[in-house]
Length: 428
Image (tube, rainbow, N blue to C red; front, side, top):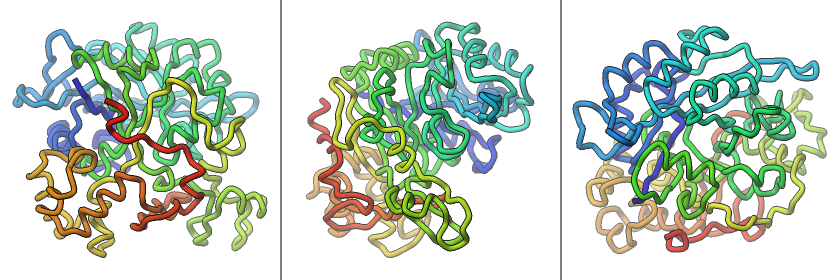
């Protein structure tokens, strides 16, 4: 059974999240996207866990849930949340975000009963906890050995385990003796597996990718995901595939091009300054316009910590496929700036009506059938993204990267110097 899973999303109770982000809307757009499994997000929030309890019903024997009024739906939910721990380490304040997976509403409630001692769970869907990272893991694993914790968006400059500000140089330094319970690292939008493979210290961890979505729109939710091949869909099989770093069950991750992320390059948004790692180093990571410190990008941070060349690929690691959201492909072809315009939706909906869901359009739909539904330029753009024949103007300092349709190298480095993704046939 092929399962595409996005295990890190947020509810409307998280800051900067759509007020319409309900369980039912998540389920509705997860189906349109092609997700079979999606995280609930934010189970630590009192109002959200109440909505989860009232809206979802348990599917017997799986430790997963479905929307109660739509028991036949193919979309399943896993109980998930993200938390922020703030603590001192060697006279520095560390602010690290973590994703927590748990097998049931009952264990989620037990986790909440423990964590409310360390922060106000009702203040935000992603609560701030005054505890160390190893203490968090110790408490979570004491609640249930089936729980899982992994660092969220590991490379973003702020609030991440390897980020340029407040981060660590390795996983063990952060989690200390509790590292034995850490099996995965979430790559985040601004990095992908080839960037993480450059660090031998990450070899023992499974690389997972999730959207960290703050809205249900299909250009946000599922923009990054994990593709499993399992005997049956259950919490245990998903978690076991991650724990074992098993490429026969965790087949590959779906990645945006890392340049598309908001923090890929070093830069300063207010001064419109965007620099590659090499250029940023020439300026001493100081803005050449205002002379203030630049926001160090993920690629520069990876360069600082890497002990391998960009072309390195470890043995037996799950693969990856670079894609971009369908709406973000259609919009530049039409010459519009937003994926939410009616013109984009019209074409998007016609493609979904024909092929069933967005992933099928992006990964499987043949060109001749695509051109029956959408104009040739849009079909060609979809195929270019599928084949990696596109460029991205790198994102920086909170600004998303921009897709440039056309055959050629990526804007930040020649694509032939990067580890190449495989075709879909290579995974199955």
